[in-house]
Length: 313
Image (cartoon, rainbow, N blue to C red; front, side, top):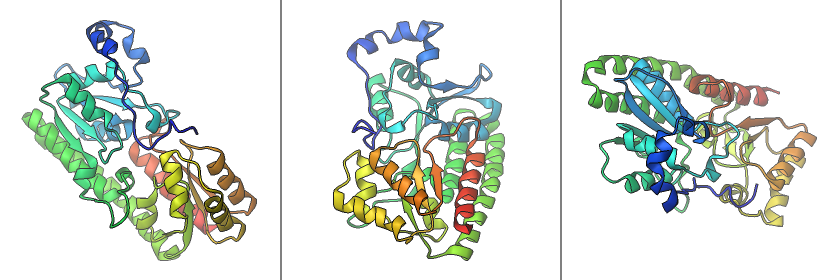
């Protein structure tokens, strides 16, 4: 994919669009091309905006019929890193009482649009801050914290608390639904523990850091040259030497699987995928947003199961 797939979501809100904001918001057809998904709810529901449908789904599970959720990125074919925000997103944010963003530089357009909107009463939940994670010494933060189930459990509590601040009468309902959501995360952590017990220390390759938290929790070693995954993540070209070293992981059968972000690909990642397949090494596709028809729990269950099945081959 071209350099437009830089590893940050790109804001694009022109002055003209902002002038037209009121008109865009009042148009009955404007939502159809907004790039955001909105769930109907009761008139008294808490308006929530999530940067992606990953967090939007969590808000729906915890808020139930008491929330009206707008997920800005909801198309499974949309590369989150090349997303261009629009005036419908701005309008939704101006009305939100709770905003859920990933943080860590992943979706900076949320903060920029909120500043453009002026004063806002919305409570902003930053998933990276909730996680408590930071960049390792000499390295960069892996901001894909929705692949880390302990973080997601913390986030469930944080969402429930934020909704309760807006709607105190339903606080008990939000807490109950958050507890139910966290209970359903436990089998996922158990699956990771089972992978670790059976395959701990085995090496895998990745194209990007997207699934690294899942890989690490499963006790697996990432054998990919850092220069390869970093270049892919930044939308840069991979050097010939780094590409050669990466392909050698497959031709030499030094890894048990390739975990591949199928939402952002290019000639060099596709070359890695072909090399893995040619060597008989399983390829495990992952994405950054929800596949069509999946909720968060179903999606992550499929991801962990796919990893376990690949290692068992």
